[in-house]
Length: 369
Image 1 (cartoon, rainbow, N blue to C red):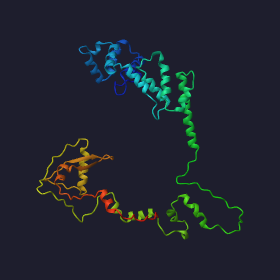
Image 2: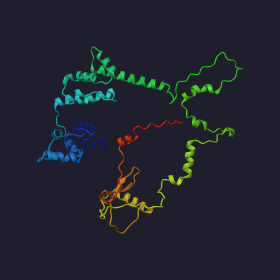
Image 3: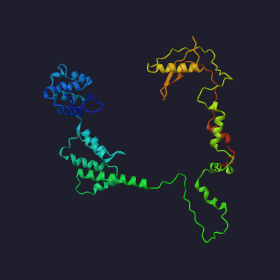
Image 4: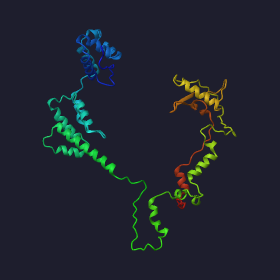
């Protein structure tokens, strides 16, 4: 016989026990599970974790000796004890519409909060009041307050219709509005009148009064090259200069290990310092292949050298990178760092700098170009 639907094991982080039981009952109805088979079917569906919990709760009795309602009630009392009515009502009355939350989503949350409030016959009236009081849109709120006989269903229709109209109007205006190009200012050109066409052309200088309002990068424009060789500008743009620089010194900017070998770094140890040897730390099994691969790469590129023994030893710290590889770091705080003879240089305080500059005149402003 083909089974209709599927019920996963119960997971209290995903749904309540009450909701799970409702889904199980629908499963029973869809597959014609009779009363004699409901208990074994339920015990097979709930999963090992929930079954073990049920066994502990029923000791010394066994789950198979109980009927369906007794099993449901036992787990309900443990997993979802009946909440305090006053606390549930407090949460309901404090719930306001959140920023970005639609009215329909807000109404759904209000209904969910009334589950254990026991409002009885006053449920719809209470939902209406909380909806009106909790709305974030004051225009919709005023519209609902103007209704003399307002029912919950009518309040929903009005609120949703106004919200939809506001959203649609905003989209229409935003699409129909011409966007102003960035950096463009207002510019008015008046066509000259009472002027003969045979007159002399206007001098170029007359445009200097408004050209600056266009906010164009005139340095780049002056260096634009024309397709006609006779109009080509011998100058080059900053981008071209940068490209030439990168091409000339390409090896400096390569994403590879540097080649400077003209000097060696030296470190000075404090007097009386003793070698420090720290044993290797445990590396997670999932990272070991990547750590070994990175160590081989560092050794092949000459960054690390393999030795048989050493008086000094620092544990490594593998740091996972975004591309899936690891970065090998050394934890030197317990080995060589405490023994270093570091040069100390105290930086001047800002007060000392100001005192030194007291009475000096500020430098002249530099041109922006």
